[in-house]
Amino acid sequence: MLNFPRWKVITILGVCLIGLLTLMPNFFPREVVEKFPSWLPSRQINLGLDLQGGAHLLFEVDVDAVIKERLEALIDDVRGALRPKDGERIGYTRLRAEGGAVTFDVVEVADKERALAAVRGLISPTVGAFGPGSPDLEIAEVGERTITVRMTEAAIAARKRSAVEQSIEIVRRRVDELGTREPVIQRQGDDRIIVQVPGVRDTSDLIRTINTTAKMSFRMVDLTASVEEAERGRVPPGSEVLMAVAAGPGEATKYVVRKRVLVSGDSLVDAQPSFQDNQPVVSFRFDSTGAKRFAEATSNNVGRPFAIVLDNKVISAPRINEPILGGSGIISGNFTVASANELAVLLRAGALPAPLKILEQRTVGPDLGADSIEAGKIASIIGFVAVVIYMLLAYGPFGIAADIALVVNVALIGGALSVLGATLTLPGIAGIVLTIGMAVDANVLVYERIREEIRTGKTPLAAVDAGYSNAMSTIIDANITTLIAAAVLFEFGSGPVKGFAVTLSIGIVTSVFSAVMLTRLMLATWLRHRRPKTLPL
View 1 (cartoon, rainbow, N blue to C red):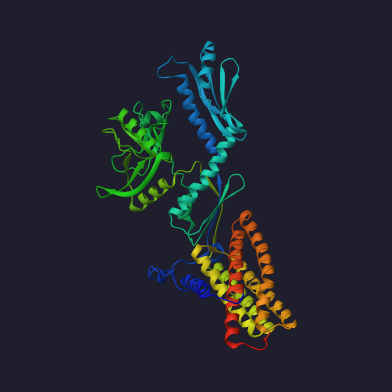
View 2 (cartoon, helix red, strand yellow):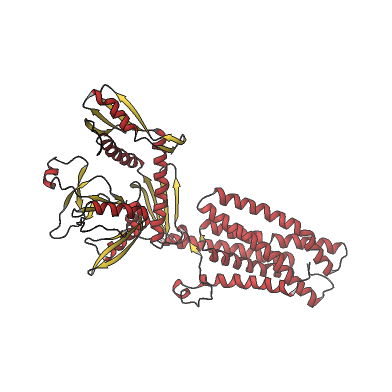
């Protein structure tokens, strides 16, 4: 095992050199690293929230708002079913949402069966808590004239679960759009989301970006009633009064808008800040389905104003002069460059399905992070120096080879973390410290085996060769079992536990390489050049 072909020597030295090069950017400020030539490594280890400070936020998803929204949409669906455009209408009164259901009374008892048949047509299958294919609505008859349409428990559970999952994905997109590096976004419990963003000092902008619902829709302006009449209580059925966003001179401050959504913001595929007539605007583009609906809506309503509504506020209400068939358009308003860019970010990331409520908000200061880094450095240095001294005292010159391999091992760990763009946390530093102690295990096993071979009377070269051959299976078995434990921690752990598992796993691989390959190469080279009669072991 002491024969090293030239290609193997080059490979071992090449791996060591690559490890040192990939670690190098961490010793320079980011501004200096960005000026490195393109052929040099430039990725650095990211510091976690506990090391560089940042924001920790805990949100609660208002899942009840999702159910309320579905009931409001169900009211429109029931109204449309009872008063079809091309069929005989059914008289009804007191159509309302109450007690988690939509209820109405038929005017004529004789029309009750027709009303039941009409609303049954609204039932569709859903993937709910009770399995695929279960109905999403259930209909009940209350009294002689009253009919109630209620969401099933399966549909409610499915919508709540979907709202939380979608909220996590939208929050992740929004934070990523801000260019933040290595945020931690994960679910806690049934309806809560943890957001940890390293490097953020002021949480106000972050909270505003995350917590804006950004639900955009295109609706028609209702011209059958004025705002004054609507505010006096004469709101046309299916309409509502909405405020305008920062209306300019000559623009309305309120609009009567139809509740029916012509095109939803869910169909948007892109939104970018732009300029039109030297004014900041936001250009948008629909997917194929949204483009078709937008073209149909604008074709059927030429000459009428339509409202662009964002979070129940009217951004603008332009008049449709001609059909818009290209699937794209411009949102104009009293935007600044910053607000146009912020709106574009929110629309690109998508709309939150439900409002988020802040339950906890705290900032980890950079001073605490600096203290943590300093404590980690001290622990690493103490552990490193203690291991180096022990190996020198226990194995003499052979310990020097083990110590050199230990230095290279630490460099390889840092280089691997840099290449992966990993986030280093305090548990990650603990994993590195643990690896430093474990890194010399293989050397100890080999050296003790070599001592045993010397006692049997073997020559130095034969003793070293036998020591490595006989200890190899033990080294592999010991490290594989540790690697399995690290894999389990990574799979089932979260956050800091995963960071510990990553650094531990990388350290296991690099320590086997440095202890088995590099140390053996150094000892083989020394034995061939010095050819000692006895081993200083």
